[in-house]
Figure (tube, rainbow, N blue to C red):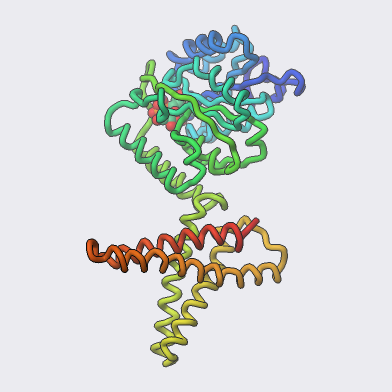
Length: 386
Ligand code: GDD
Ligand code: MN
């Protein structure tokens, strides 16, 4: 997509030797009142920094004209104005388009909102932090000491925000690297994300970045989330639903995402396989119940192994069929260790706690949790070692 602006002529910003340090990617939809103030504050905050600003604009008002006027007086300012089809995906594709376009231009990219909810003077601190800590990502977080999220209007919006944050952190290990994976204000080192294919479904771009590039080193700075300067928020119920489908699509389509839950899902399928095998052997084959039980366990460990290699660890390569068979064989002692862990939790609880608390089903559940965790850790470190 073409960037308008004098410093962006050939799309590369010139030779690597005069690459600017920083590009700001700022999505805009109808922000004509905020943009001039923002550009002025950035100019003040980043006085001695070589930077560029690209607005990725989907406005229906005079925002693009306002930005073009700013661009005439300040050559560091550019705009990608989108119309019609290009606009599909809204904020999400605005930011990913921006990231794709600028990754060649500068060393770092900072993504922020145009409505001054993200204080422009923070950018400098984020840049300094990235350089001094050698981090790949600096998140401006509303949830660390010194930050706050007062700028979120009303208790409902706040509850939705912290609920969706927790959901992401429960499902994705990578989202736990920051206290604010939903922040729209972050800075990335371009070399750390080059080659990563961001999917346009991603509405929360930071979450997308963290999950698609699981090795990133992340640090944070506190953010005092301001109230909107002018205009209205574009947050809607629709975006809440988009967020849920974003989580689901990250889970299904990014191989390394949410592995523990994939493993637990496969485990649950193993319970069904086990039950069904036992039932068929007992009812239709008239097998001895001990033999049938052993078969059921054996078969379910096998289907678990096959499903885990096809789904949970589908990005892990095997060095050939023999290697694959050996790994399958290894799944058996690992499963037995898991059952051992279950018993190690279940038995002492039953033995020493029951009098005060006779909840054997709860103890069994805790045992299953222990078994799943042991099995998961051994599976990732041994059976499906990359
Ligand atoms: N290009 C483009 N296209 N920009 C958009 C669109 C769109 O369809 N929708 C919104 N924007 C721009 C706005 O102009 C603004 O600069 C920025 O994206 C954020 O939009 P707001 O409407 O102000 O959203 P918000 O304040 O409710 O949400 C913000 O805070 C969240 C944290 O609570 C955003 O920064 C979210 O990304 C952030 O997670
Ligand atoms: Mn806003």
